Image (cartoon, rainbow, N blue to C red; front, side, top):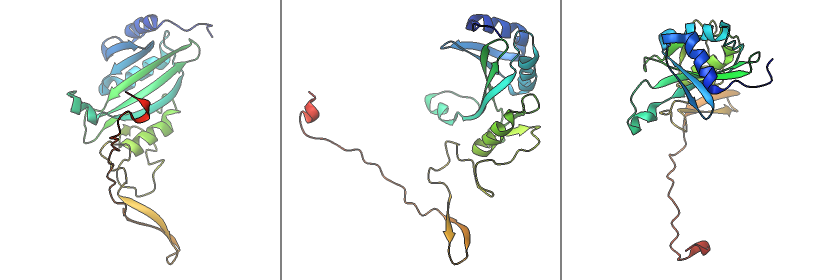
Length: 202
């Protein structure tokens, strides 16, 4: 293992040479390299990142779903859902972030990388559970955090904070039951201070 980390600019050049036109762009921000890839090229790019001589990203250390729905409020157009992956090369002492967008908002779908890094297994199940992103080729894609029969995907930005149902133990039936949410929507009114020089501030 090397004793020093590679410069982000050098890693950017190495990745550009290894991946070529299969990626839309490779950026550097805050000293971190990010590879932006289209869904159609995602699986092949990930395979190259693991196997290519200058890459050797042996470990997938994180994978998460993203809901970009509120980007449209600030004038940014594009697909709603995406996946962000963080890879680590222990042998070359380097890291990279990979971002891929799901082309269809109604059925967000990308290839599974579980056959490349088996650590992706539960991460992809989590993204499926919480965002509804489908990972094609995953051999056990089912919910991992929410309950059986759960409706919806709770990390989507349009999912209500109170949820759709609440769960409680019914002593008469001697089992857990689901009921419609009984929580009233909470109105939050900001506190208005009308005193002059409140807190000693001018």
